[in-house]
Amino acid sequence: MLEPTGLDDLDLKLLDALQRNARSTFSELGAAVKLGSSAVHDRVKRLEARGYVRGYGARLDARRLGIELIAFVSVYTSADVRYESFHAAVGALPEVAEIHSVAGEESFVLKVLTRSTGHLDDFLSRLKTVAGIARTKTTIVLSTPLERDELPLGIR
Image (tube, rainbow, N blue to C red; front, side):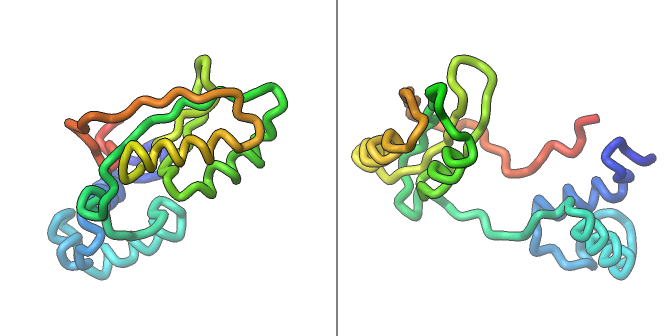
């Protein structure tokens, strides 16, 4: 059955298998979805060409690399903010993992990764120099009981 996304059940199963292990061979993917490796190859190439697969990469362990602190920074913007400039300036800060435009009092929520509270303090000082920021509010993550890297492809 074709989904509203233009994908059939087999495409969704392939995407799910790929996001769980992007290093799977076409044979391994084929075994998972009960299809031959050449047919899987063709489908995966078509999914890539259509933009459903944005890329492949390794998931790194932040803590082993010295990134010990995650924070969410709510950004309240001033009336004169220029959003394209704001996005570019904030996106250029290496500690910013995500920028989310949100509904509510704040305009944006940033996911920020730092080595320590001192590093976070330094980051916030640099962030506050970005034009268009009126104020910020920071929430430090104490623990992350659940974090999913995969998209929920089973939602219909």
